Image (cartoon, rainbow, N blue to C red; front, side, top):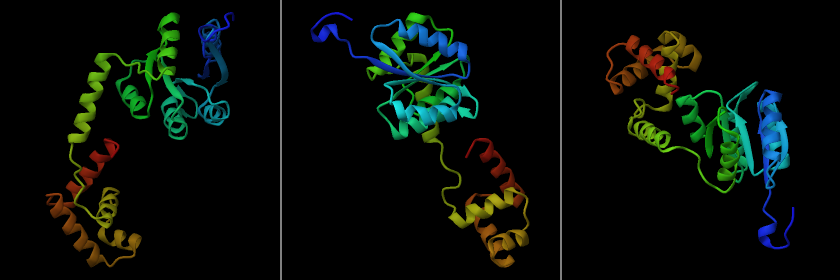
Length: 223
């Protein structure tokens, strides 16, 4: 690298690559290493390796495959960003998955690009997130905001329940009788019956079978 002034010495962007396919890692590394302002400082093929190696080298950007053995790139992003918010995470995936995109953004990812991206665009994406920018197109951002607004507007159906009532509701969802619940929680069967009556009234339900169905629905929505 030549040039004695500040313009002649561009700041190096330190990049860490996470992908379970060695060929993909080598290809991306070779692409980035041709740039005079980029250095690949480490690689990992699993979520566990990534979580142990990234904090050691502290890159500027972590390029993460969404799907990894032993976890996911989203999980890695969430944990890394929690401990090292200065590290920008760029998700790289083969699939245009709206749920994965949503999870990645909620985990703190700065960008989400498909592996079909052109090499020059990937280099540009790394530079963008390294500089603190976001790499989400307007369509994706709009859909994300709508989903977030919907999640915030949706009321918590169990908000009025006490912690004890929530626990009993969960056990109802497991098919337990009042006696079994009482044995599990060390409560008298009559006490459990009173709790059940109270939680059914709060949920505007008439039968415990309806409560069991509600629990199943909430679990299906990852409540």
